[in-house]
Length: 425
Image 1 (cartoon, rainbow, N blue to C red):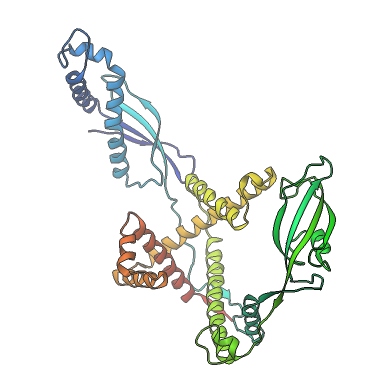
Image 2: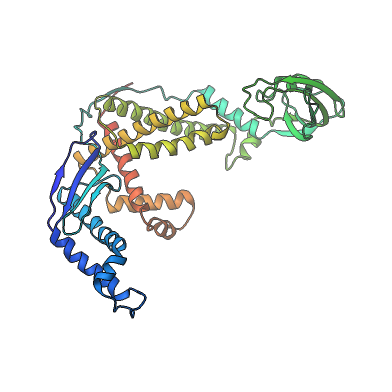
């Protein structure tokens, strides 16, 4: 099959357009093959199956024959054209123009996207400043107090009013003062004076006793995040059903023993300090990495495939909404636009960073050996508490092994950049 390939002007670095021509001889051969297929199966009134005149079959199945020829020849022709030009599209090529006439060559125009070509800037000996990662006594004590707070117990109290940090079981009724409609009655647990509570509720609760009832009013702004309440004036009635006060354990050796095999409070503090040091090391390395990649990225500029950016941006939108515990339908048009800009900016930077890191890995001949992959399998099995064979079975599924190796390659390349940076203390 003879194909003439002509590259036309491309809209940008990542978008390409190509013309592919399939020879008249090849079309003729495929036409006869397809016609024979239809002729052998055609059911035409007045003729036995497969016995109708070929010219009649041509006339009746003209469009189907034409469609079959295109479907049979076009994908292979496009694939061979791309292979000949050594092009690996990011997206599947799209036929934008097709000229197919009998007894003439088949002509197609296709569009597709490719990864950009770019030159790496200097990426070794990047100067970055390391943040202080030392762990102080105050840091250890804060973590210790956090453990103490998590171990707090709440005991029922009688004959006193509610104080800050009490857990209150309350019944709350509400009425819309404009429509006079009642809101559903709620029984809920409230942490007194918690900043997430409505200020009016916090103010009402303090000092109330068990079985006591009180009214308060709230005028919600029109842009309130809860659309059910936005712009409404609500009168609430709150009734205290029960009160529990916080009881913190003493910081002593017995407290330490409750958290594992610690002989005393000092051994627990030592473990906390060890964990904090490890966490600070990881955060410090992450911050160094971000600074190094940012400095490299700022020195190079190139186009990105639009389809890949859009796909990554959509994924980012879902991640951002999930982290903020929001759904897109709750957002105003202004918030939606801001979210789209944020998600798109993150997508572009993430894709750009990955392309830079992959190019550095290629230039420095950084790769993942079978031994390293095996060690990663063992690490995953241990951290997930599953047999090694299960991890290998999971990774044998399509694409997962390649994805894992790609993530490992990025991490290894990042380690290379950190090792070759000039880090100032």
